[in-house]
Amino acid sequence: MNEESQRLPVVTDQDVVRVRQLVRTVAVAVKLSLVDQTKLVTAASELARNTLVYGGGGEVEVTRVHNERRGGIRIVFADQGPGIVDLQLALTDGYTTGGGLGLGLSGARRLVDEFEIDTEVGKGTTITVVKWCR
Amino acid sequence: MPLSPDEAGRFADLLSGHAEPMVARWTELVAANLRGRLSSAELGRQTADLQRAFQQAFAAGATDLGDEAAAELRAQLTELSNHRARQGFTATETAVSVYALKDAALEALGDAANLKDYVAFSGFVDRAALFTFDSYVRVRESLIADQAEQLLELSTPVVKLWEGVVAVPLVGTLDSARAQVVMERLLQTLVDTGSPYAIIDITGVPAVDTQVAQHILKTVVAARLMGADCIISGIRPQIAQTIVALGIEFGDIATKASLADALRHVLHKTGQRSPGAKRTER
Image (tube, rainbow over all chains, first blue to last red; front, top):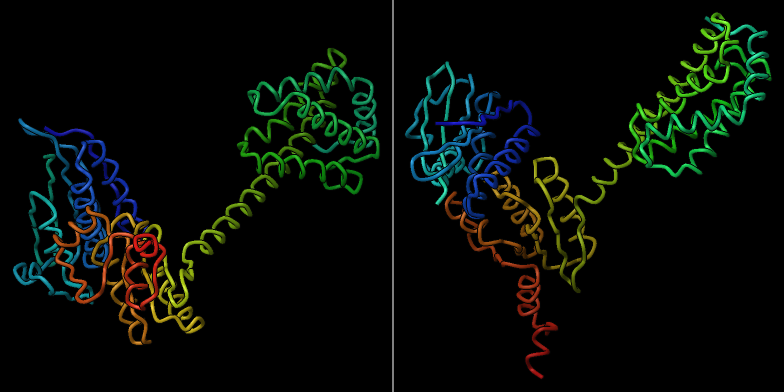
């Protein structure tokens, strides 16, 4: 099903920039439209920063994926941080524990086609997003 | 193994005696390594200079590269590495320019070579090459430091666009540190110029996420507190759609697609006629 997986650590602010550049490169390679490229890069930027700021650092995996009809990109953001206590609340627009706008997680969900959160308090959080070519 | 004064004298004789074929061979070896990125005439001149410097150092009785007698040679080596580093040659390519002397000398010596002498000579050339390597690294480091400084200088300019209008063209990644610099410079420029209008242009920002948006919003609010009106320009279609999907609201802040639109907007508000407006009226 998948191929060409690329992993990047997310430990510093520069790593978020690197994730953004990698996602953009792969998005161009799978021929996402300019709008979808920008949306995916922005979502990756939000989620990678969450991994860094709230998860205490982690890892990002970018993979080109295919189904019967089209290609796409899957990005997995994984950290071993404190996890999310109230997922419903965390996904509410404007809710933040860190002084941001409170739109990163909820906004990122709107920017991608598939969005999945796997979190456990005290264990960490793994977020998987997929964007398909139109 | 250091060179004895005796050996130094012998090598001085050897280098002056075989000067021409040795320089030719040396140049050939270096040229093969640099693959034609320096003209052979220039390379020949450099090699001849180096050869002469080595010969003079030995003739003056230099037994170690640190000796007083080798001062001229050290200067030559420093100049060579300076030259190579600035022209973008690799460290290996630079060091080889010196190392190649060993092969050239061995060929010139032929069977007459005394192993002990040659090992001592070889050690001297090694130290010369390492010295070249060190100064190459020093030059590259200072080049990088210069560039980093230049980048910081050019990353956040605040320009006066019109009487009473200043603009901040943002380019690249807007992290917290840069956002802070941008805000400080903009606010200071507003005070210095007494401008009532500021345009923040984000054409050069590749992705506007919530952090970037928050930094921009804070800058706008700060400028407003100082009595200046802020316009955000350079919002491309894909950025606009992303901002909508993210759910970021710019409230009552004026936003424009291009810097020209933003300037026209300001001129219209202040009642000044813009160059574009003049043309349509004619």
